[in-house]
Amino acid sequence: MDESDLELMLKGYGVTTAEMLYRMPDHRNVLNTYVWQHMDLAPDYPRLFAFIEFWQDRIEGPLQAVRFVHRKLIRPGEWRNVTGEFLIN
Image (cartoon, rainbow, N blue to C red):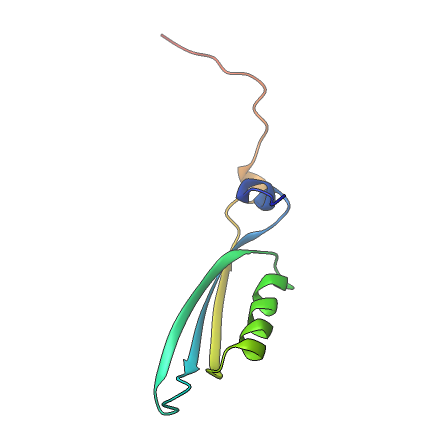
């Protein structure tokens, strides 16, 4: 069963966005871009590197460049457990 994004964020995962610049298989002088986004774990980036390996093995358009950014959406100082709630009104 897949974990939810919140469960992954609590384990240290963050959003990784990669821009892949690749050559078109039929027209080698034409460059195209592909944007990939997934929850991944820094600094190893296992899902990103698995996707790059998949691309190199199965897709005919050779990669020219890959740029990526990573952002943790929940940081240690931003998460706290709420044990109660007061309603005023």
